[in-house]
Length: 248
Image (cartoon, rainbow, N blue to C red; front, side):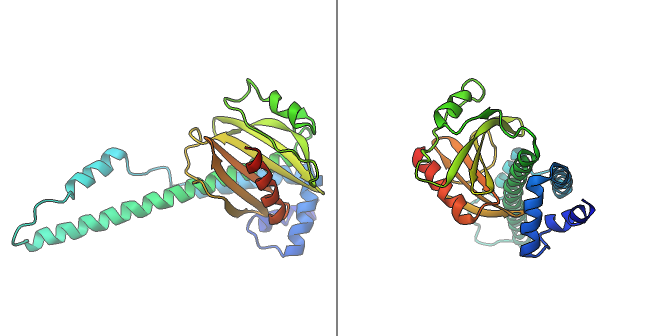
């Protein structure tokens, strides 16, 4: 146990070799204690990363800046002090735009970190799903009345994927669905939330990211925001993504 515990922090920093990553991934799936420790360290790292980013320019402040630098009729002669003021204002606008972009990137990264936490918690749980069934016609109706939307699940016949079951998940205060799939010895979580309830812009295109040793795909469709996350290969994640997109 101490051997694996000593490697958790290095694992979080992505500094282990590929073979050590695989060994520790396999251990985490069979050791709830280490998985719980990893989740705790994840939450601490995320809290530290988010510290100092709580304040952002308010809409009123941005509107005042916009009005102050609004285009006005250009005089024949521009005093030097006025030119200097305009330069300062332009620099301020550029800084605000940069801050806004960085905040959006930080929000997206925080969301992916939260999803990674939920996935690790599912792996560590003795009861990972609340409805246990390989039948999509049993799992989908179970969510009725528990979440404020509905969704479609793919037919898995002639594929390597197995539906294990599902549970209600929360991203912040937002309820959504978490579906668990298995491919060979790997577990994959599929999260579905209303995109208007998750105040983060992920766009409409598929995104591939690495969060710890997980592959993640995300996309928007018909008012819903989908995330597919797991330690399966990127090809398996993309294949399951394609099945889900066809079903929806």
